[in-house]
Image 1 (cartoon, rainbow, N blue to C red):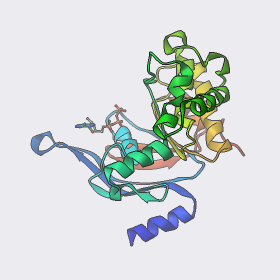
Image 2: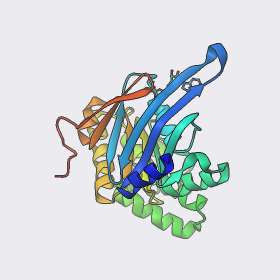
Image 3: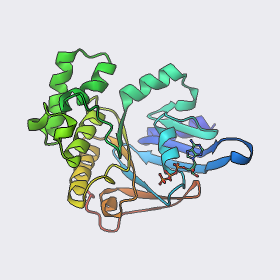
Image 4: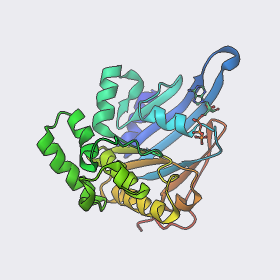
Length: 247
Ligand SMILES: Nc1ncnc2c1ncn2[C@@H]1O[C@H](COP(=O)(O)OP(=O)(O)OP(=O)(O)O)[C@@H](O)[C@H]1O
């Protein structure tokens, strides 16, 4: 019944449908309830931001959506797949092919050039190196870093490193991109630029973006803001100054 309802939502264009999602960490006296029944539907092509106080469950929620963490109760349907029903191998393949990740710490491999870092998801998906490096260079061009493709991370600014990380998250053309505090290590102007790139990708290419952030200055780039508190989504809001709005 719930699956049928979820499928109906997906037919209507939803990329993610979470229904009464719960998550508890630990046991006994150490037990922490991180999610207490989250209902969330994210449309294809939408850029949604998750905000809320520290510890309210934002990272837990996106980790479940990204298939990095199991949930305890409820349902989470991502790109039409019930992730709870996947075995670990299928889930890993699903993550590799359909999801992209952008983190606060750029997580670039210091010994590899920008293009080699960007190529990693392609190699993991079975592409050969020469096709991979060509595609990685194209992805770097799209984030304005064509000239930096042979540079190592230590030779790049923070904003440039984050753009490399974005190129890496997108190079395999995932349908869903999950970002955890993508601008918190960046100055204001660089953070805005990074969001402009992410925004363009969400609207121009029909990808779904879920962005966890504490950065008030980037909220205007969202289509919708989901406020979380104490393991629940309390309300949704449209950004007040809709800089990111396309219409
Ligand atoms: N691996 C873990 N083991 C035990 N408790 C955890 C674990 N990860 C998170 N928690 C707890 O779960 C709750 C939700 O954590 P979560 O990281 O999802 O919050 P958050 O909203 O992302 O916080 P922040 O904004 O500080 O990153 C917190 O109380 C946290 O202490």
